[in-house]
Amino acid sequence: MRVAVTLGDPRGIGPEVAAKALAIARHPAESTVVVGAAAFERDFRSLGSFMAVGAGSTGQGSGKFAGRAIERAVLLAMARDVDAIVTAPVHKPALAEAGYHPGHTEMLMALAGAEEVGMLMCDEGGGDPSVPARRVLLATVHLPLSAVPDTLTEDLLVSRTRLLAAALRSDWGIARPAIALCALNPHASDDGMFGTEEREVYGPALARLAGEGCLVTGPVSADTVFVRAFSGEFDAVVAPYHDVGMAAFKTASFGRGVNVTIGLPFIRTSPDHGTAFDIAGRGVADPSSMVEAFGLAVRLARERRRAAGPSRAPLP
Image (cartoon, rainbow, N blue to C red):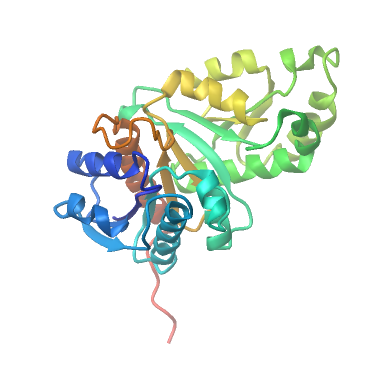
């Protein structure tokens, strides 16, 4: 397995956690390409090859710097020079100021030409098969709460669930995934007492998903679905909006969580934390989530390669 690592915003803890995680060397990658500012090259001399991009460390420079590293890593992945990309945290305002999409997910989708991608938060239990995995896909991501009901359509629930099921099959090797749809309203609306989305949106979506090779359950109330899923009843949960999914996931798995972008033609993982400017440069950043991101990237890339089957020589 060959992995590209982008160092994220140079003002944050990305370079530090990347170096620490690579030094721990728990991931069985055959080779690693680190993509970032030349100023950090000496920190990675014994940890992999280094590809320097851009310059600058503040303001627009940091956004350009992070953006160019992502662009270079995607070029490597699309050319199949690497099997996976692990990205350190970026600063969304700096990316936007530099003229890029304000976030990894949107930027990766555009660069790869993917039709649809999803943000899947994962805690694989540290590789212990006896520990149930925790996986939460966000149906809607960075929206004001007031915009969620209009955005959460039948088509969106169906497409997100299909995208998740396909990823669980190809990248996790789960032949028949069990997926729960987290309700939007309290108590899944109690038969319409607290909203109509469960009947008018979830009902038709579940009908369309029936018989598609996965077990889809829902709508399940938010106050029980994560307990059931994190105990092993479901392989993953589709959360209707950002905070209901992220609050539950990070409460249970902060420090071990990994963000996986599903729907891309390559594997991409990232730690579940941000740039942490307040502790950057102090040498105290915890690399645990970055370590998990490396390990999961290699595991998923290997499974995707296995699922794709042996490569075929061109016909004469």
